[in-house]
Length: 321
Ligand SMILES: Nc1ncnc2c1ncn2[C@@H]1O[C@H](COP(=O)(O)OP(=O)(O)O)[C@@H](O)[C@H]1O
Ligand SMILES: CC(C)(COP(=O)(O)O)[C@@H](O)C(=O)NCCC(=O)O
Image 1: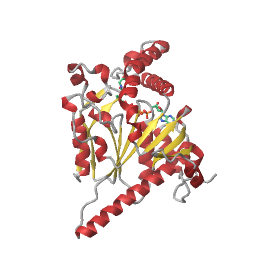
Image 2: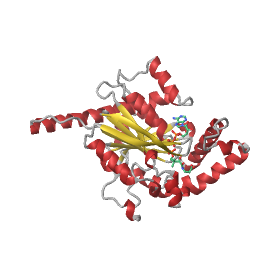
Image 3: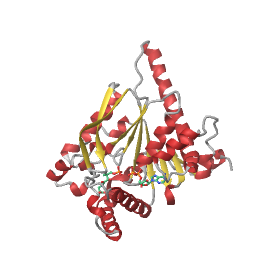
Image 4: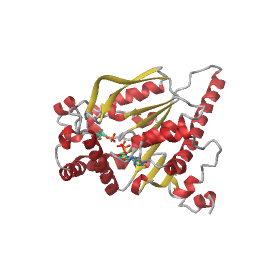
């Protein structure tokens, strides 16, 4: 069945076009879409478990689609400038990536950063994670929110909105705070800086959220997503997400064995079985609840949904019509 036939057979009532993995992979029909040895080693450096088949089948077509969207946006600006008879600097195109804790947002974001920066039309691709806008642990403690890290109220959403708004207003030098999974806190006295990127990839749990409206401090009339040009939600079934969370927890724990400053150092002193029990409890009491209450409800606002199955393989792609 051709891709065109596949679309026309789909429900006209759905807001999305659905692609099975092989249908999506077929959309990579462009000569530019090959990987050099350098690309492969760069991508393998992102994540040793990442398969190149995944990059070729899923992320290359996705980078082609995003390139077309960015070009279309750049063209629209040229049209506006022609009308105004003026020249205005390009503002960065913002791609948002949302999804559960441990679904692979930051891995997907880094793959897209590597692939999108190969296109001559937009070589400067910056990557920002919204974790940097979590309140520092001392503020979370003061607000009794340490058990709510990742929930809407644990972020300084006002600062995040000001940040994306500054990017879109064409501000030249941009800075953002940085979160460390190693210290489990915002890194003091350090910030991410970038200058006039062509694309900003903004990755985080809360990219599509309009929540937090019950909290007067968080009641905004504008949302982060108002500044996002194209949004992607990475999804997977909850049992897989829990497994990936526990696996990542064990990886952080292994990395912390020799580093007494690592937040996970105390977990390295207990048995693997105890560590699994703790990770499972953190998932059930924090991240799993956050997923159901605040993250998955934002899925259907995304322009594109990537559904993962076992081993992080993307099995289905949905693109908003
Ligand atoms: N495409 C992938 N292939 C293999 N492993 C992956 C892939 N994406 C993520 N992972 C693994 O899943 C875990 C969570 O990924 P991560 O990118 O840290 O998620 P998030 O940023 O959504 O919390 C990590 O252990 C990471 O190595
Ligand atoms: C920092 C986070 C909120 C965001 O996670 P990410 O999606 O970036 O992996 C999360 O990793 C987290 O620390 N959640 C709180 C509970 C816990 O896992 O310790």
